[in-house]
Image 1 (tube, helix red, strand yellow):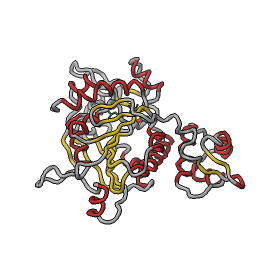
Image 2 (cartoon, rainbow, N blue to C red; image 1 turned 90 degrees about the vertical axis):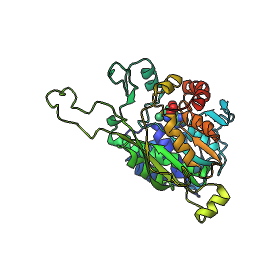
Image 3 (cartoon, rainbow, N blue to C red; image 1 turned 180 degrees about the vertical axis):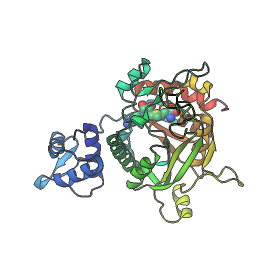
Image 4 (cartoon, rainbow, N blue to C red; image 1 turned 45 degrees about the horizontal axis):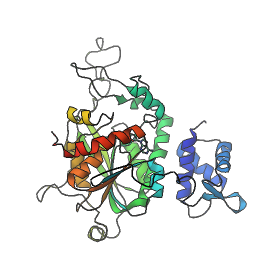
Length: 369
Ligand SMILES: C[S@@+](CC[C@H](N)C(=O)[O-])C[C@H]1O[C@@H](n2cnc3c(N)ncnc32)[C@H](O)[C@@H]1O
C-alpha cells in the first residue's frame, strides 16, 4: 500500500523514540505496519538507508536507532521566537521538530486546535483557500447575506486517513510528553466525528485521558439536509446537526499525590472559577465574533471568551507556561496575555506567523462579547 513518506518517517521516528535499544528492520516494519496499515518492507528499508546518518544511526547487525537530538533533522528548528508580544513567544517551525528541540519538563499546560485533515494546512490547500478555490476547504454559501467562514471537509476522511491521523496524534503526544511537567493538562480541540480517535491515539502514547470539555456552540451551521434533495426530503437531517465541539482533556501522569505534584510542579488540576465554582466541563460559547475575525482572519479562529476560560483553567495555580503547538493566528497566546500567563506558540505557516504578529496584541486587549 502506498503511504505518504512523511507518515512513514513519523511512524519510524515515533517507534524508535520509545526504544531504549536499537531495533531491527523487522521490528521497525512491524511497528510501522501496526500504526499505518500494511507497508511494503522495501519502502521502510530504503527510508532507513536513505536517512543514515542524518536521522538514524545504523548499529551492529543492521539495527537502527535515532541519531542524537542535535542531528540534521532539528538543526533548522528556529531557536529564537519569530514574534514576542508581552509574555507570549511565537516560533515559526514545524511543532514536531520544535518539540524535539525543547527542554524536558518545561511546559505546564497545552491548549491547542490542531489540523485534522493532515492536508488542509498544506501549502497547496492553503493556496486554494486563499484564492477562493475550494479544494479541501468548503466555502459555505452565504446565509442571510452574511459571508460565512470556510470549513475543512472532514467528512471526506477515508479509513486510511483515520489510521494516519492516529499515527500523527500518537507521535505528537509522544513528543509532547517529554516536554511536559508531570500533571500538565493537555486540552485539544476536536470534533464529534474524530474526538475518539484523538483520545485513543494520545492516550496510547502515555498521556492519561481525563474527559472532554464541551464547547456548546453551533459549529456546523446548515448543510444538514440531503444534498440536492432538500425539497424532496424536507423533513430529514442527514446526521445530528452538531451544536457542540469536544475538547479532549489529557494529562501527563502525576509524580506522587496531587498535592505533591502541585507543590513541586505547580500542576495536577484545573484552576477553579471561584471558591464556590469548580472548573466544569460544559462551556457555553457562541461562534467567533466578527470583531475578532476582522482582527485575525484565520479560517479556524477560536473565540477569546472561550479560550480565556480554558487557558485560565489549564494552570491550577496560575503559574507556568502554556503551549499552543498549532498556534494559527496566536489566539491562545492572546488569551494567555489577557490573563497575565506566560505562553509559547509554534506555527508552521509563515503567513499565519505574520498574521499572529499583528493580531496577538489586539486580541488580548479586547473585551470579549
Ligand atoms: C486549526 S488551526 C489553529 C487556529 C487557531 N485555533 C486560531 O484561533 O488561530 C491549525 C494551525 O496549525 C498550523 N499547523 C499545521 N501543521 C503544523 C505543524 N506541524 N506545526 C506547526 N503548525 C502547524 C496550521 O498552519 C494552522 O494555522
